Amino acid sequence: MKVHILDDWFDTLLTLPCFKKLSDHHVTIWTDHEPNPAALAQRVQEAEALVLFRERTKIGEELLNRLPNLKLISQRSVYPHIDVDACSATNVLLCSNMHSDTPSYAAAELTLGLILASYRQIPEQTASLKAGNWQAGVGRSLRGRTLGLYGYGRIARAVAEYAKAIGLNVHWWASEEGRKRVRADGENLASSRTAFFASSDIVSVHVRLKPDTRGIITTADLAAMSQGSLFVNTSRSGLVEPGALEREVGCGRITAAIDVFENEPMTDTSHPLLTSPNVLATPHIGYVTEDEFDLQFSDIFDQINAYAAGAPINMINPTVFQTR
Image (cartoon, rainbow, N blue to C red; front, side):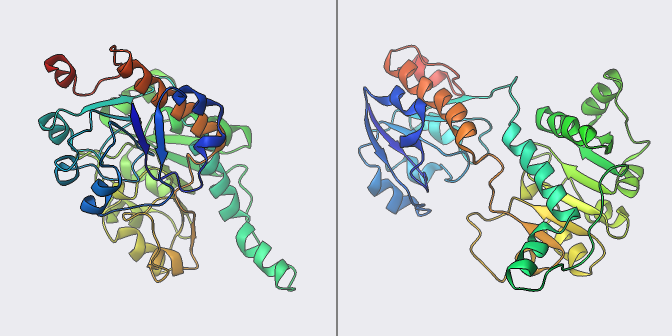
């Protein structure tokens, strides 16, 4: 098959062990980002299969209507960036391994890293040292403080393991179904939503972005957090009510550590979440490790080979294949 891989910004996939799985295909790799559907369609006009790097490129009707040769989109995990109905209407099969039993340990590790870096002022202290100024201030210890984890999924539970290992107290809040699982597992559930935010020294959100979770973290939630507390988001920016985090950090009441933005790639250096001294920001690197890529793209390439063999796996819109 003619396979086009989008948004491999550092040309990483060629170096990974899993890439040999595509040895029987004609592969084109694009190492930059093209957001314009018309321009992107010109690039990948011959593609029979598109490989996506998570949610870096939106796949909609305008693009799909311009790709008559496209048969398959292969990716991994959730797909809020893909118009599945448009895929079905244009006879494009979407395959996506939902990896229901495998957390992203890379994202969990970054979450802990951001917490440590924020509390110990690692970026500021490093910058001070490089500028010849020695120490820049006094950080805070984590042992004995309370980490509130919002969402009771695989990544949050991995974060909880790391947090407990360094002496943090962990408590939880989640959806009604999530709270039932917290209780069933004997974990510490906050007495109420307000108490969860008010009594957490650190709140880290780990929820999938869906229509019913967009804006789930509200202005009132952040306002309930105590002075100097830390809000961490390595999940999705859209989980937070628009403007709420900017307002809270802007008045200096809380701090934040974030890995996600509403518009990505974020290149606006004047954005308040990049200019605020109360925010530690990273460019959506939660899943960006060689190990994580090899795990993810091994699954993605398996889906291409399965399709080429006439037995596709992890189909999201199987009626397309059944019709064919």
